[in-house]
Amino acid sequence: KAGVTQTPRYLIKTRGQQVTLSCSPISGHRSVSWYQQTPGQGLQFLFEYFSETQRNKGNFPGRFSGRQFSNSRSEMNVSTLELGDSALYLCASRYDLRTGSEQYFGPGTRLTVT
Amino acid sequence: DQQVKQNSPSLSVQEGRISILNCDYTNSMFDYFLWYKKYPAEGPTFLISISSIKDKNEDGRFTVFLNKSAKHLSLHIVPSQPGDSAVYFCAPYTDKLIFGTGTRLQVFP
Image (cartoon, rainbow over all chains, first blue to last red):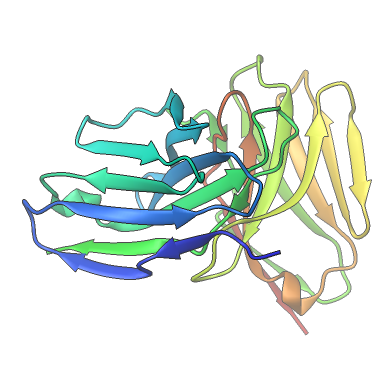
């Protein structure tokens, strides 16, 4: 079974631009979560989608948004990029929303904002 | 505020010995905990979990201990192997994973 895939793997953008990251979950998984990893703040939860609906959201500004499609693939968008948005963005998928439903992570997208 | 702390940023252990990674949390409502391992340029990989109804869970070389009264978890790896060298994250689960600060484990021959 193929794992979680994220595209692109690396991205360089300029301050003020916007960016869209993509995540394809493991086949059969209906939940996709997004996390941001930075040296200063560590790994932080952004949001989770299940069956095309946002189920939970972390403490991030409205510039960070996402969506999920009917095939469970998800995209994350960041508008008006700031230097502090430079981070590794990780996507994770799981089968459902039960507590014990294990999350499988993709390799991440490394975003650099200059 | 940091709800999950792993006070040792790094740990160095000889191959074959025991590695003990610690994690402290502040929220007494946490009742399900996971440990993840992360290699550079890869996403975190699930290692082992524990529910608050237990105080110990074992999976091969990995054992997690939970002390709810002390709000403390520990991950034991026995015996440690060079391939275990990675960053380890403790992560309580509520309706989302809340990752700790991580501990970098280095296992040397």
